[in-house]
Image (cartoon, rainbow, N blue to C red; front, top):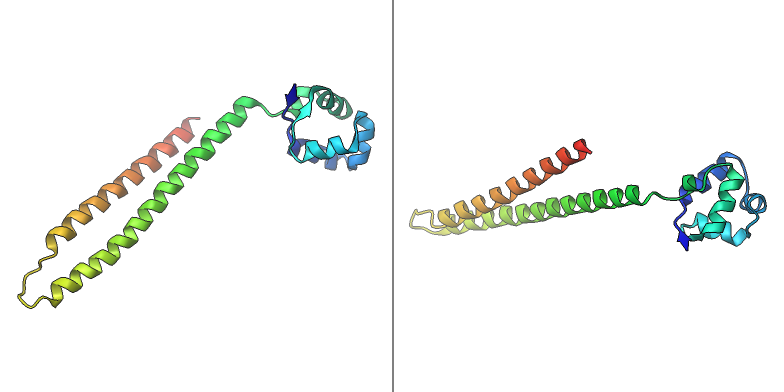
Length: 150
């Protein structure tokens, strides 16, 4: 069975003790290549994790990644990515809105009859972009509130 050791923690603990990878491998009774693979984040066997834990004088659970913590971090990362995508979508739409408003104003000014023909499309497009902006604000606030609860 493969375990997911915490590569950053193992490397940090090794460097804090001023141990080389070779020294850690000798202390743990595992191969140098095994230590290198583990520090690169590859999965490790139960025996390798137990040997490294013995070398550091800690429980093997201290060297493995907690699945619940990792799942929570993945959910948080996914939520942040979704909010960032929503924000980017709003900014792109806002840039299109600004360009569209300039075009609509230019069309209305160039018309010599004195009427502002493009007023209705401008109003409805503005309502649409305001709705999108409101959605972004609500999602941002909900995400922050949920993060504060956790």
